Length: 59
Image 1 (tube, helix red, strand yellow):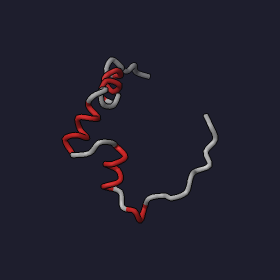
Image 2 (spheres, rainbow, N blue to C red; image 1 turned 180 degrees about the vertical axis):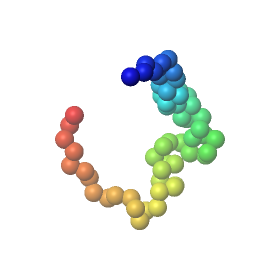
Image 3 (cartoon, helix red, strand yellow; image 1 turned 90 degrees about the vertical axis):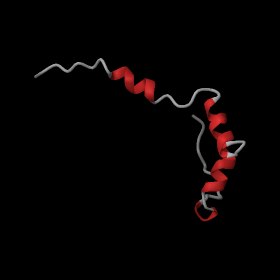
Image 4 (cartoon, rainbow, N blue to C red; image 1 turned 180 degrees about the horizontal axis):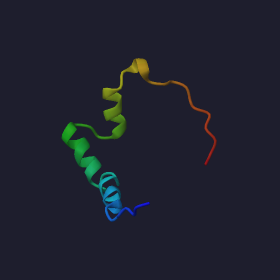
């Protein structure tokens, strides 16, 4: 069996942590939306939106 050098393992984490605090709002502003809900409402067709409340347990 051969050993594999995993020194690049942390690079994945650094690239996939999501937007910084102000980045999300800056992106929304540049698209002309105040919130993710407003953006979603404009791009998701009503015909595929769910209307019932999911019965999910806490936790």
